[in-house]
Amino acid sequence: MKIKEFRKKLEESTENELQVMEKNSVEELFHLRFQLVTGHLEDTAKVRQLKKNIARIKTILFERKSGGFWKKRGLSSPEQHQAAKKK
Image (cartoon, rainbow, N blue to C red; front, side, top):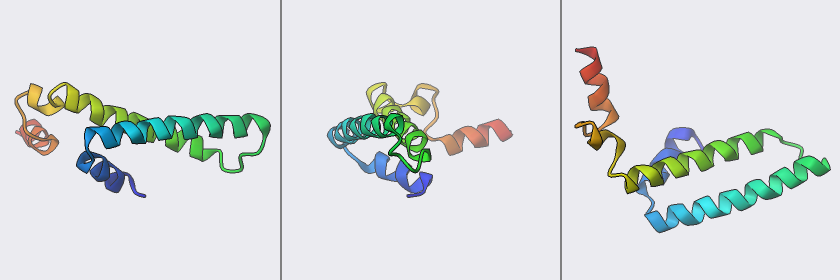
């Protein structure tokens, strides 16, 4: 799944769904690390990708709990921020 598609899926998910996804991802990371240490993991890039996905999930959760990153700065979206930077 592409990063933009994954981000969109995260943004459309509820907070409970995100928490479940985070929990499952952390458990999967644990198992992948175990496989890495024992030498049974063939695709080591999965560990890195999973860590990034966990960070993305945590970022969305944090933004929702904190009232939104852009709203705190008086902007409604990253696009509005980019437009303001260009002026």
